Length: 80
Image (cartoon, rainbow, N blue to C red; front, side, top):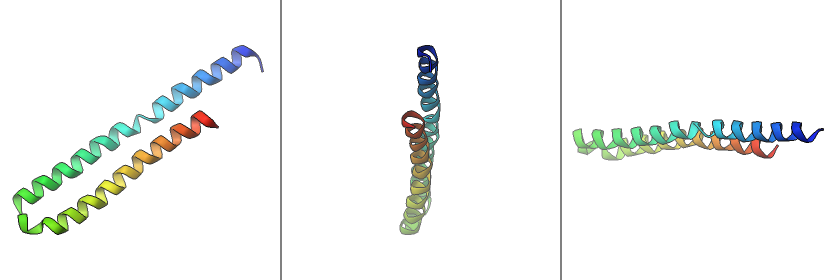
């Protein structure tokens, strides 16, 4: 391959990896929403704290899984 084509491919990889990390914005907002809702729910019904906390941890785990998938895709784009 020519040197110019390699430069284009490398720059496309960097742009693609940067765009793939945009999914982390949604994951960060999702985590904030999950725990903000937990605080709101506990403030309204303190006796439901244990059950709400379990749901919050489940929501946190699922939201973070989406973020980890986004960062994994960025690494795949960069190093493949």
